[in-house]
Image 1 (cartoon, helix red, strand yellow):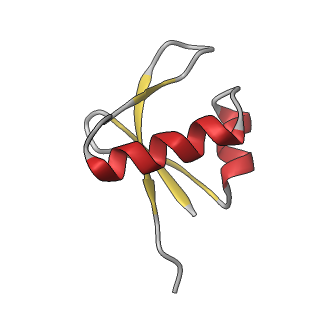
Image 2 (cartoon, helix red, strand yellow; image 1 turned 180 degrees about the vertical axis):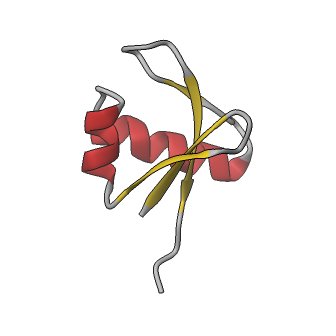
Length: 64
């Protein structure tokens, strides 16, 4: 699961998988996977929605 937050740390939505998240951001699964990996390392901290130009943060949520 992937949590999507705005820059004020308000929860926007939760995605069940990378594919759903990529579809919402109008990008590929590889881009989302890369973003999550880089955000864990502190390289990036936000991603831009190409349709509306808003910035978001994504976090992988552990299930169970």
